[in-house]
Image (cartoon, rainbow, N blue to C red; front, side):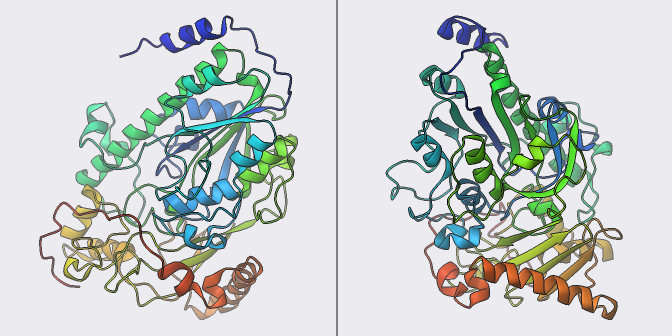
Length: 492
C-alpha cells in the first residue's frame, strides 16, 4: 500500500516545487469528480449518522453544498450523456438508453473546452457504458491511468479539465465490509420503502463503505492539487450519477433515484459555507464549465449555467425561478416480457411541494418482469433493479406480512399512469394521491407544466415516436443475473 505522503512527494519531484504553477491562460482549472451510483443524502454533510465523507464535507464547507441537485436520468449512460452534452437525455435519441451509442452530432463539453485551449482528460468511468467507436475522440477526452499521470502530462501554459470517474459505490460489494469497518448497523438510516432487517441494514452499510472509499480517493486528488499549488485555482465539483443501486432507487424517478449529493469549491469566486436550495440539474454542468472557460454554450444545450449562484454570497434560494426541474427514464436493461423492451418509460416534475410522475406504459413492470421465464434476457427478472441482498430479501419475504408486501409492491409492482406525492406530508414519496379529488387541480397544473417542457424540448415520448426512438434500438449490453435466477419464483 502506498504511503499517504507518496503521491504529493512524487508530484513535488515531478514539478519541482509546491509553489503555484502560474499558467499563461488564467482561466480556472476544473476537476469534476463523479461517483457511480451515489445518491442523496448519503454524505455526512447532509447529516447521515453513519457514512463518513470528510473530503466531500470539506468541499461543501469551503464552498457550496447543494440541497436540491438532481440528475436528468437515473441510469448510467443517459445520465452521463446528459452531463457531457448539457441536454435532457430524451433529446439524445439512442443515447437516452443504457448500453447504447451517442450520436456524434451532439457536442460534449470536454471537446469544446479542448478546442478552446483546455487540456482535457478522464480516468475510469466517464461516458457509458456503451460503444463509442463512432467517436474520433473519446466523448470525455483522452483516458489516463490516474489523475497523477494526467497532471504529469499537463502543459503548464494551459488550464485543465479532468473527469475523475470512480467505480464506487456501484455493486457488487464485499458482504459485511461496512460492519467490519466499525459501522453500527443500528444507526443506519433506511429509506422508508425498505423493510427493516439486519440483512438490509448490512447491505446499506456495505454501500456506505464504498462511498467512503470514493471519498478517500477524492482526498488523494485534492492532495495532489495542493502539492502543486493548484487547488485554489481549480473549480472542484463532486457529485454522483444517480441514486443507490437498491430497490425503488436507481432506475426510478423518486428522490431516492434521481437526487444526488453535490458540492462545489472555488475560492476565487465562491463564498465558503453556503447551503443552496435552488433546484439544479447535472445537465447544468456543461454550460457552467463552458461559462467558466469563457466559451459560448451551444444553442442545443438545455442546461443553465450556475454562474449567478457562484457569484452570489447568499444561501437558500438564490435564483427564484430555480424552483422546479424535470427528470425522466427510458430503457435501462432488457427486462420485460417482450423483445427490446425495458422498464416503464417515465417523466417527472419536482417542485418544493410536489413530485408528479407520468408512467407512459403502465402495463409494463417498472423494474421488469418478476417471472424469469418470461424475461427478454434469460434469467434477468426484475432486471432494472441491481441484484443484491436487499433485492433478494424483499423478494423472498414479500408475503411475510402487510408491511413486507407493501414495500415489495412499492418497488416492483405495476404503477398507474400518474403518481403524485406531497413533500410536506410524505418526504419518502410513498403515498400516491394522484386520484384524490382534493388534488385534481394540482395534478392537472403540474401535468400541463411537464407536458409543455417535454414538447418544448422535443421529447419523442410526448411527440408520439418514443417507441421507434427509444424501444426499437439495439441494446448493447447483457443484463444483471440474479444469484437465484434459476429458482422458479411464484408468479405474482
